[in-house]
Image 1 (cartoon, rainbow, N blue to C red):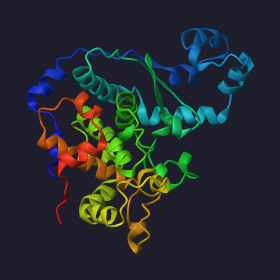
Image 2 (cartoon, one colour):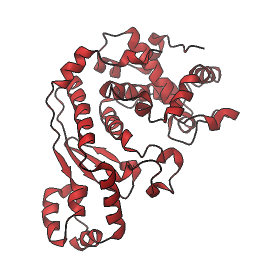
Image 3 (cartoon, rainbow, N blue to C red):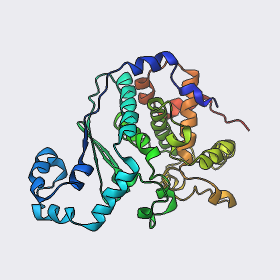
Length: 309
């Protein structure tokens, strides 16, 4: 598999670089951390969507004085500082989004903290991109001591732009009505393809959300993974347990074999990505919107996907 096949040519990269994008950034995390009680009304006026109406000002004043919140703010500041590097990364991402979707309106970026609610570390709406920075302090940070390793592994700022790309991909990539394992695999394969297209300078393990070691394992065992799926007649199965075994985040994939604990989770997504990449390599003139609209079974059949032994 030629992974670089889905990277853009230098000509396109130059075109992307010329697209004007200047993110409107609000550092709510910093503004709140340095505020006092008298500043609350002004903050509520500036960020009304972050202040639920059912909470009185006394709640926010108490939060200003909470020692844990102060520690969170300190730790975020020590990891991200002025956020300039991450801002540049996200601006480049949005340049690529604008290249493929010229009518897309760039949202306002607001950084905040959310007490490490990692399921909501990135929220993307039509007009807002909310990024909770306390979910990106590094996998070994003491805030994550009680979190399972396979989750904590992703709580690192190197995955931040990829998480935003995932949030965008979910907007343009429609979840399939087809309940087959193949359809689900290729749905996630399309998502990963989009991420790789929008972040051409990121390593494939970052796109996949793997450690480098997990990525190496997946690449080295691609043929065996595929053979298992075929021999066990899983491709057109609608067994919902397959999602937990091979598509959802988990400590490892569940083949029911001795090698399970050596394997990373989400190997079904990895195989789906390989199928989509193989198809695109054979159809380089196909537009992104056409690819996303194409049924999974058609992509699979026309890809002639067969991993090397």
